[in-house]
Image 1 (spheres, rainbow, N blue to C red):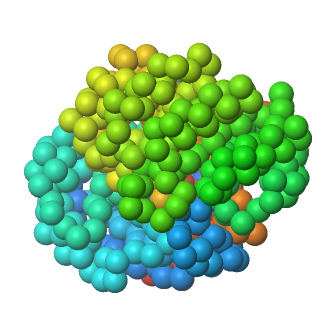
Image 2: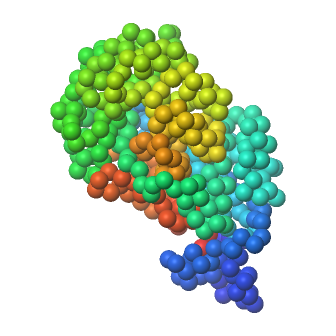
Length: 432
């Protein structure tokens, strides 16, 4: 067992040193710290096996107050998010932990994930990622997304090897520059300019704005105000969130002419990228717009799924900056292949935020291993979208340094800075 309240004296009685090497959770927490913890990592002589799957739902986590999503025609304020946490326990005493989250997750998601994951993964070797992708992730027709489970497998693989994931994947760097991804729509141009100045002082060197006004002039006014406030000090990104829109959707709906006009105007304003200016299937029109840009990137594909879909996107030349999501687009192993495909096409790779702090850290590891890495998406809109609500379960929001970089964890596996209090509160297994 891996429960936090196990008596360490009774648990270790009669144990040999070799047994403790394979069961570090049996030692008192005080005896395992720093380099000592690294020394206690399994030696890899025995193939690990998953012995148990444990899943919990966490509902109504405070995330801010009055968040208005720009793509919501009803403009319904949101204050909370839902999460589901899954843990893989192994016969070596190691635990892989992963998480998915959203504004509202389907009812019963924890039970569904638990049943499907336990039925397949118990008895399996976590290292067999490609096999699991073929036999589980690509075969499931569940009513909930399951790709987030793969992060838990990789967390185990890294712990067995005693290495952070970005090192296992072939480190290209140990840090990625982040951008503050704002979400709340109901901010004036002047307020966003003040936000940008404050974010700069907090370390950010890039900010993303949302374009959802009915009039193009109002969208451009927002960008101009932020550019005047921090131009030259911060990169400015723009997200139109049009990928799911059709002609029958509530306004504003961008057609080709509006998207092209906005792209040209934003490029003149030295915006770094324009994200999702058209429906996600409009690859030819997106490529036509991209072909008329000289400096600004066209970004997108956060909601697309699978290698074949991304092959077609890249072949069409729709984007110069690709944003697949490891919780939506096919799992980490698939997203890493998409990153390599993008590199072959000369396209930058900067994945979508991953739905939680766990997804963000998975992105960070992938980007540190990718030579074509762009910016890390760091969800940040204090008051409306607080990092504590998005990175739930961590001891504190993952830090950004004074130059705007986020550094990869050096602990084995995912390296998430989990909170012991959070694990105890939600009856999760703690790995000492």
